[in-house]
Length: 581
Image (cartoon, rainbow, N blue to C red; front, side, top):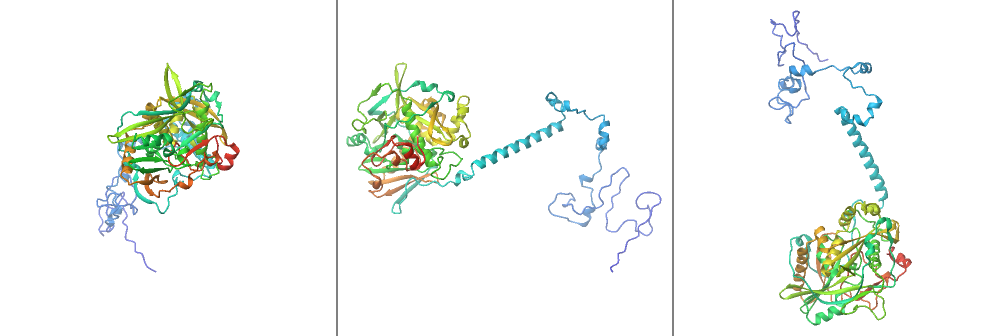
């Protein structure tokens, strides 16, 4: 057994500590520093082996111990320094026994009446107020957690983040297509180009007057949205427009398009869903077209929202179903708010797409020409949907409808907020549908409309996508609204000018511009001359065949004079796509 030898410990009968004189020299332990102290000083630990010491012997160093004596040296340690006199004076012993609480003269008297009296809130002790604030925070956290649980339960079938949704390309990229270039949207942001005011070459069609009683609609006296099954709505591509063909033969311009295609290009940086535009170089001219049954004929819903929509195609709230529903809501709304008293405004020529005896939706096509530079003019077919006389002055109107499908997705209930917080409703729509609103505004500016009417249309019930009500109609001046939503006209024309200049450098042939479904960029492909010809049809498409593509808004290009006829029965539409107006 190993022995342990304890050194001699001298005894001092006259006081504390080692004796003043020790003949054997063992009064001080070997190799242990000794700090003299007085009886007024407070003793702490004899040695602390857990402290981290630096070169100066102070705690806090990350270099560990540098000498063995540092464990015994508390001279530089503030935690064991002698307390100052003022600290001593503030030191109090506290009796924590329950009995003493009734006899503490300094304790405030809390009786139940005082404790819950709100008038005494200001006189509460700071500590008590802090405790109540902490309690309120805890309650708020619990309430937030409860709401999150309910919200997540309602969204159990949805992906957790918008980024996880995989969007499909609007057109199938074929392996034989040759990609010529890809342009990131970031390069569009600094483009700027100014064009002079356009001139009207021709106005075709006819308009009915706007019913101003709809401006007085509120959620409390809403009106059901009617269906207009007998009126035909045309979505004719650029190259199938007989008027544009005539103007091209007369060399009136170099570039030809429609307001829908131009607005898609101008608002491209705001787009999320994929879209495509067909480009045809013929001689020295450029035609911007859409494919038949293009997504440009539909309206995107919740495109720029962070909340994902259900991925199931047969869900009434899926991206595809909502776009179809929004398209029919928009068409029906544009007809319902017109005065059906037989009075019409006619123009130079009748509707160029209407057949004899066919009832068509009232619309005016303004063929307008912009001077892009000294050698280049652009002609676009622009639409206005109505007209109104104000102070003996005739004004053109565009009519569009925003649609609410489920307040759970937007977080704003229109029926509650439209009267008192209309600005909040519009701000939410600008966040969730930035691209759609920007395109509507752009189309109104291109058409030279004096006013754009926005209708707020909601489902009768969130799960009923057949029946809707008009909750409100609000009018805006396009230029003022463009400023409000940060739409820069110089930037928009800069984007068009850059795309046109790029396409004019291409050799004769057919090309397609495709917005990447997952990245903010657009690609241009060289495609065969007969590309997309399989979709060509001679007759107007029935309604149930018009709803195949994903979702976008507009009017378009490439292919045939396709019409969207509202005459299909709701049941047929429901069976085909699970959505209708």
